[in-house]
Length: 145
Image (cartoon, rainbow, N blue to C red; front, side):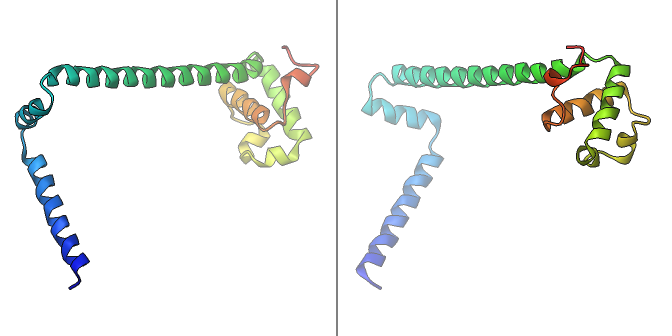
């Protein structure tokens, strides 16, 4: 066996012993040993906890901001179509599907015929067509917007 291999094996055994020692230590053991290196360990722990808490709060605020932004964007997209009354929405959907056979292909047969669809389904389909770029309420002279 080469000398490097022997040294690597010894080092690996030492690492495993140290890891086992750390994992077997109680919190009090670690705290007492840390006090030897840093007399005011409690103050240091409080600093680390404050840093962690600030980071956690910033991350939570960032997620909240992103969620609010997503909700606002969704409301803006939906607001353009939702203002149709159900009869107007059905008429508009029929016209769009008739004028855009490629878009109609994306929907089920029942949806393409417009039968047995709830008002919510019709409005949802108009929103889908808007997201696909097939329908633009701002370009529609008949739109109630």
